[in-house]
Image 1 (cartoon, rainbow, N blue to C red):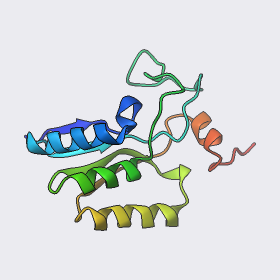
Image 2: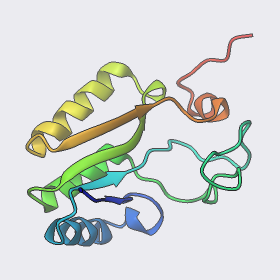
Image 3: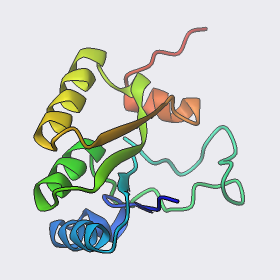
Image 4: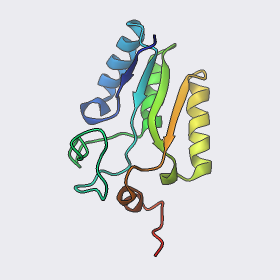
Length: 137
């Protein structure tokens, strides 16, 4: 069985010293992966219920969430073997060519250690707030 560590790049773990400590400790302890989440924007209220809690997103809207690829690139520079994953990448909120280049760059710099979890935003309100998705009437 492989065990991964989730998550770096959210809340207090946006601190580079904590990312380094978590990544190197997880690697030393034999964790197979380290994961970084993505939310471009957090909102006070969502149109749909968050499925993994009481229905609300489990963090306040002012919670810092770093870019997962930048965070994972930093973790890669601090480690040598642990795999790196996005838990998740909200594809519709990105320019597809820029996203492809970002993923390829982090994969190259990490020595081909990147995993990607892809999804669309859980809630259409997030997509609209990001400015990447238009609402059609």
